[in-house]
Amino acid sequence: SQQGEEDPQALSIQEGENATMNCSYKTSINNLQWYRQNSGRGLVHLILIRSNEREKHSGRLRVTLDTSKKSSSLLITASRAADTASYFCATDTIIQGAQKLVFGQGTRLTINP
Amino acid sequence: DAGITQSPRHKVTETGTPVTLRCHQTENHRYMYWYRQDPGHGLRLIHYSYGVKDTDKGEVSDGYSVSRSKTEDFLLTLESATSSQTSVYFCAISESGEQFFGPGTRLTVL
Image (cartoon, rainbow over all chains, first blue to last red):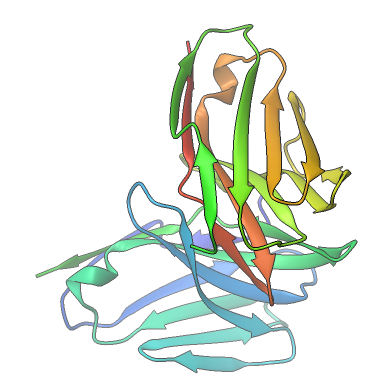
């Protein structure tokens, strides 16, 4: 079963606008991560936020985490055409030292020039 | 790309045939993972390995087996492929809290 559920499933905006994607999850987490996937490629790690953190920034990315609501959001500011991709949240738990990720279904983001 | 390669990159096979996918990494990572990606499901963990000969099941392990006889190779086997196993398969390693993914194998079972 999927831990994370993302909203919206698809988002289309104009270049330069901000894009916000949301992720909800069901159980307690260790960390929450966001990944990007360009069409036909593997996933690329964007940012990790720990369960005791509320907000984290990396360049044009801002991630928030609300553990009381079991939700996270990813904000991409000043979007560019190159940001067109699918974005996935993933919760992780550590078992036998291995990091088991459970992914959401993803948000397909399209940036229109 | 953390030195991860997958082979083959594309494969078409028939129902009932065995299929083995290979994941190869060059940087001596201990933890390796196999996922499948299907429309509407995101990525789902099939099996993972926490060392040579040490593996465990993930979320969707039925119909799959894995082996890891040496650090650099993690093999995923479909003993008798079914059409429901048509998917894109990704291998990954974990390092410092992140996972790094291979380029994927597109498998079609007719």
